[in-house]
Image 1: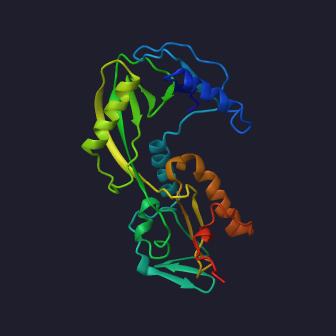
Image 2: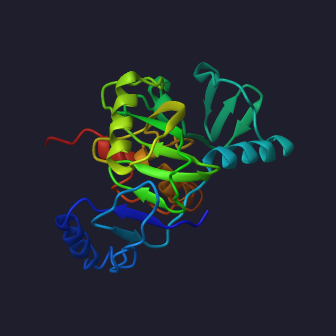
Image 3: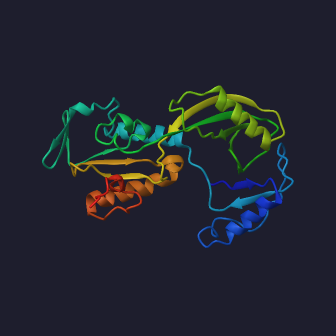
Length: 268
């Protein structure tokens, strides 16, 4: 869905920082140099907004649901837990129960910690919590982004998030996360809201903030696609294509994303 993203400014200094960023060649195509002065009911904005260009959002729940239906219709999806012990490495491929293939790609997110082939990789995980809120007096047809984002869903409903927690590795909502989100929402809007739902998850993050893509050191048939962090929707297609081009066409992976960067350095 194409939709503008506005950055709410909290000071003149933030405005100045925005214009400084918009002068940079890499950012100029994406940051408007015009201050957005439009007023939205339910939000105080004395310092106005900056607009991020070429933006929108993906309804990931709908995407996953419909793609799953498509794969099931094509008989290309098996809904079961993966048994690592059942994977056999062959001279030119792999066998998993009654399936033989040239390659297998593990794209498991934070679940990679249970994978015996790749659990040595330094996947940290960063928990995030989100709300769906109902705020009938919040009149918003754009995405507002500050310390959290507010995404209009229609009918007075908004998705709001997210928190960052580097210690808790569960996907359960917490009272701490709830309080943090409530406080941040109250910094942005000045109308009443009701929490409709509260949920959490663990992002597959890496300390160097780069994806983990590549091939297992002992088998050219076993691969990994992980570590997409907080930008998985944007990074996913490009990283999948890079891995495909490496497997099928021999195009080397960029060293910044290649899991080979975690191999022990030769001390000689």
